[in-house]
Length: 604
Image (cartoon, rainbow, N blue to C red; front, side):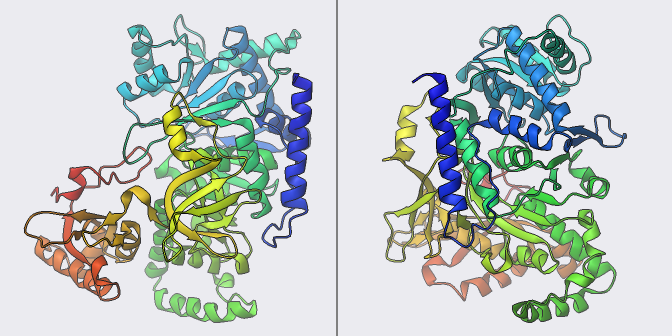
């Protein structure tokens, strides 16, 4: 099939998807029927420039103390076109090109310059060490890499070492090319000059929606990172599907905080706003969150639970400092009853409180891990749409999302299945709990150069997630744990550590928890359920006063764990407690490594 016929088929597929699963859907949660058909990311970007050309696409501080600078869709496209053209003219057509560094305009424009006509983009994890980065550069056969200043010395050394196929190094921050490192800004100028002279090598590049577009390396809690190959259509599928359940407006401002090499941030807070004509404002760093929120006044924030929980705690701290905690808790209790009548009694008092979020926040989305649904309910009571969703890198990443209409939110679930996706539960037990499997246009092409790992997870077209859970009659997905994490007692009982961790983390004195099965000698015939915890020292000091002892802390925690044990079956009860002074050892994705001995020890 020739390229023209291929694109015609892709256009028909995208149109059919939008018509069948969105415009003609009979599911009431598919409420917003405004998705436009897109075949690939280049098609997405070009149509967004046509529709929203004068809208602000990006907001960034290029220097620490300057105001935010606005970049329109048209201006951004000119940069992308220039950068892509220059890359092609430097021999990078069809090659693997990596991007690494802080989330910023330079990173995201470079990603677009690669994926929209130059080659295959490989986002790299900025937390990895030199050895791991060199390994991924070799594995993905990377020829060019974009980076910020902190990596220049490292990549010079890697390139000079001669073990990789690196040809070109490009620094986001340098003003001019040097002999061995090119400048991002100078490369854009170079390409714009080539475009002005009639070069359309990038603008006219042919994109096939089903070909590999991205290689993303996973950062799991065990095992070696695998390169997830996503196609253009994998990404386009999610972009068309998700906003049918949660509305994104062209006037929305997304506040970008998370690392963009993760698919959650990349698809949902970078590509999604560009698809919908919205704006992306970059946070300067975690210590600048409050200042930047006040400056930008964003309307949407995508975060991980720890970020949203920290905002929640900050709001309650402000309420307590004003001596209004009891009053506000009473108001929240009343609101639970009045909301059933469609009356929110909290919202009129929330304006001052919400200044913490910049004053215009309308949507908070939590992803990456489970969050306490009571925290989302709190933000909903303040008049903010606060929901959680579910995704996996191998699904580009979105598979489920809670709708933005209050009566359809079920935040104790991971979310409602996205339009166009299928779900099944494999090997379900008597309670309907089994491995969650998905099928749809967003499921990856496979793991790069790893057919055996691909065959392990994609069987008969179904992606086996490794997550355990169930689906209710309304297609809401509930996750109970990870298949590889389940503790199987010697009596054959299954204990889901995530379930117990959730309960333990409701204890105000606990910061984080990891539950595991201990089989030390002398602990009886069955597996002992153990919990390692780290403390919220501020809350502990409030309860015990300054100068508390380890024994006092353990007694305080045990008093709370005993309450949990009293409400759960005997085989799930926690019988061993380890209190850590230091943080857990984690992956670069900030997930606790479950199977390392150090995370089961006291470490104090």
